Image 1 (cartoon, each protein chain N blue to C red):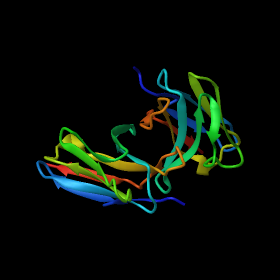
Image 2 (tube, chains in turn orange, yellow):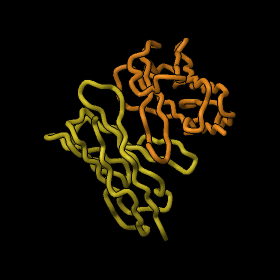
Image 3 (cartoon, rainbow over the protein chains, first blue to last red):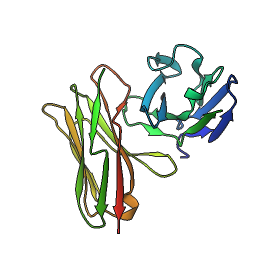
Image 4 (cartoon, each protein chain N blue to C red):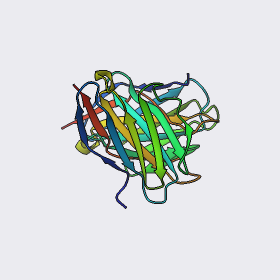
Length: 113
Length: 110
């Protein structure tokens, strides 16, 4: 079991460019969560999917951020027109159906110059 | 909104000593999960509790089953490899998202 896989590990973008972050949940896990971690705000919930359906996106910034889960083996978080304040570590986690224990990936460190 | 208040924010322990971390919740929580974040940034799950206590080696966690308003993580015989940032996170009754505390930075010194 490789755990939750996130790619890339590091991404540097220029202001105004688009960034796409990838997450492969643990095989067989039906729920996928996205979190963002910064020094100032700590760990913040962004969105989550269950069985590929979006369930709660209450933490997603209303503009420029979107998440998809086109199949059970991967989810993407897309940030359009990136801004320096988007710089953070973006973490993906997954869990089994009916279970609440979350398993996190190693994260993608996004730096917007 | 729902808040998770974690204390202390930082802690230094000598090897071989014991200590406890605490999380207080501003509302009743359904479950709690404790994590350690290592130097590479990986969040490692230590415990998930819906009630009661769990123990794993030198670590033990408890979740107040009556009021469901706090949880503790006890570290016994601290070792250098226990150093890292410890987070608690909790869920309310009608919600599946975890709300995280601000973390405790633990340094174990020889």
